Every structure is written in structure tokens, then in C-alpha cells.
Length: 115
Image: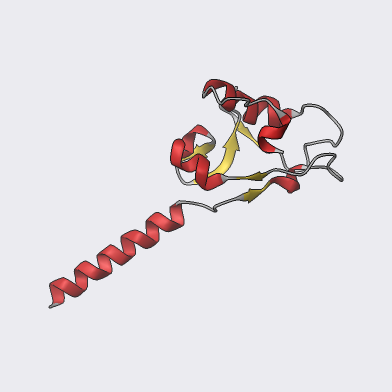
């Protein structure tokens, strides 16, 4: 009986750790915009991307946390970095488009793909 209880607890603990490591389903990227966006701010489908990629392809470490430039591999932050009414910005050039191009995402640089 004790072994069964320990087994159930171990399974529950493992599931909790796996769920916690998964990160959020979606990430609101409106905090990246400095001012009122000219297009709808992207609600990044994190869970969708997580199914197809390793955490370290976008983040500095496997636990998530700081993002890294897809171009340079260096830590990068886009908070407040996007200026409204610009056709492209650092988030596009250093992160989104680089990955979409590398992964050969159809229409990966099209505005309507994410916005």
C-alpha cells in the first residue's frame, strides 16, 4: 500500500513539474510596443511553438527566462522596443523573421501571419 501511494505521489509530482516547465499557452507581446501599436499586438502562441521547438532555440536556457537573438545568440529584450508605424523592428529582424526563415515557415515574414 505504501508503495502504491508513493507511486501515485511520484506521478503527480512529475506531472506538476512538467506542467510548470511548459510555460504559458499564449504570451501577450503588447508590452514590447512603445506607445499605441499601429497593428494588433501579437498574442504569441507559446504552446504551439513549444510543441515544435526546444526552449533553448528562443531562450537563453532550458528553463525559459530571457530571450536570445536568433541571429547572434546573445540575450535580448524587446520590452518597449517596438516603435508604432514602422514596417519592421528589432523583434522582427532579430527574432521572429529569423526563426521563420530558418524553419521555412510559409508566409513567415507576412504581416498577417502573426498580426
